[in-house]
Image 1 (cartoon, rainbow, N blue to C red):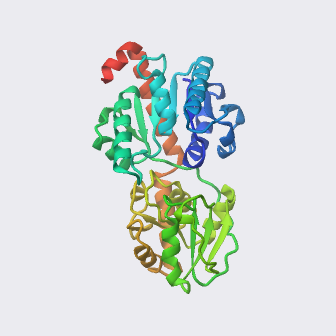
Image 2 (cartoon, rainbow, N blue to C red; image 1 turned 135 degrees about the vertical axis):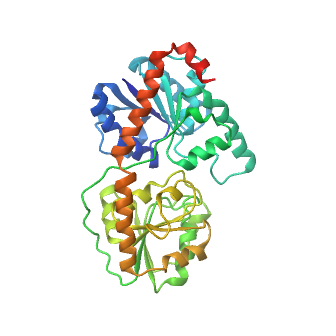
Image 3 (cartoon, rainbow, N blue to C red; image 1 turned 90 degrees about the vertical axis):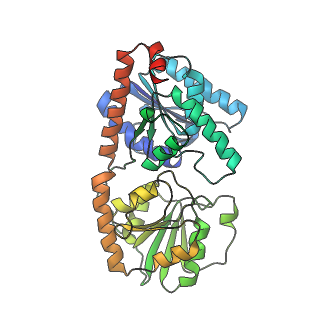
Length: 373
């Protein structure tokens, strides 16, 4: 079996996902049988992977020229590598691949993972309905659509995608040795935020929530500001410490020092930061959106709150003392071990590949389309 992965962007969750699966697949199928086509600018985001597994192309912006260059890179790599399965990640790569080959009955099977539906975001109703229509019409061009949460599956069913085409494989991350704790001497509850400082991640909601409780919580922020109203300048506060971007190992040390990781997102396909927190034995307070509702167990591993509501978030952050947060963190660690390991994710993804590959053997390529119509 030869697997070719395609990603128009390998930053953020997609880069982490590829880092978790490429090494495992190289061991299962042989390093000569696995490749990932990613932008050269994003190669550094796929960490801990044999660089020979990566094939790069120079990403342009999402203009007509950018689409043409991506399509050209996909064609060239498919012709050179001759894959059994092409696994496209996120809507842009998934759309280009299916438009190029989905109608042709190609000599490979197509697997598509949206990594959070593009229509499941805060946007205009017209734009989201257009994206829904595109995804619904392109869905028959994929042999399987791998979904990273049950929330994604429900959204797929809502817009009319055939349930037989869907496979839920919950995200997972590899375990690590217990990280040493970063130095964080503060008698207040220690709250950690990890992510982009933008509207989607709800960073402004966090700032509004913690401002009235400066005497009760201390906040550290790992991430970088981007353009937008959520990053409008605020008065300096000794309560909030900005650390900038940190390496994965450094993030783990901050998680080990924190009492609670907060994820106040307005929308979220899954929420890998929650898994990183649970892996590190830290409680989580998160918005009740997307896949986060499947990760956090209310009042067991943390709390779920209404998004875009500073008052509710403030209340949640002041519910417990340090010992109670630590007990919730221990429960989160147990939940991670039971449900969200990379081994479980990779085993389930392998099963999807085996099923899809067997279909291509049992049926000629031109009959596969009819069988799935």
